[in-house]
Length: 212
Image (cartoon, rainbow, N blue to C red; front, side):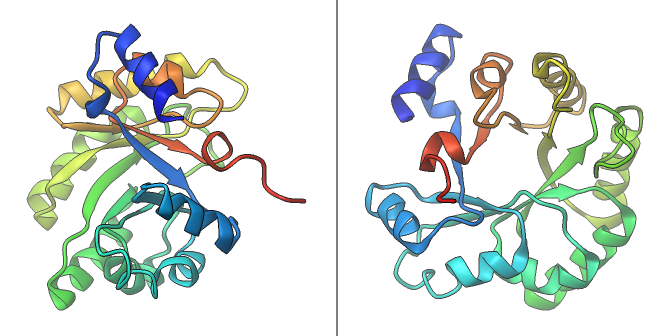
């Protein structure tokens, strides 16, 4: 997997070190998590706070260099648990959540890095900020809440070419002078790397197919 990322990066004229592999560990069995850790993987993405707590809360002591990323929607009433557990929250997408995160970050004296999720396809059923509203939203997050937004994240519509959406996210990221882009999953990560992704979120491509 790392060899594939390295080769794709080099073909695109990029340094492989500029791309972080996020292993998506949702619904993975314990044996696979342990195998990944033993092999040297340290960055993991989870979709739900409760499952992430079950996977990682007790492993923190044994693996202090873990980096845990929340890559699924976050309910405001789970902000306390998310701030306590995650190093990166990639799905900031509304004012109510920003208020809850700011409150918990102040209480816990802990500041996970934050990405804004962008709904690049303007899909009504999907979370994220509309592309036309991203600049204003990021500005409010910076000035109103004191957040140092690290980057943008997107999940393209399944029925559309992902490259169009990755290119849009890259354009928005550059306009806002943000350092990071979280985009690309198992089926489309080479395209994401070619278009500038700084992290790719891989489940099946990293762990293999889940057991039925």
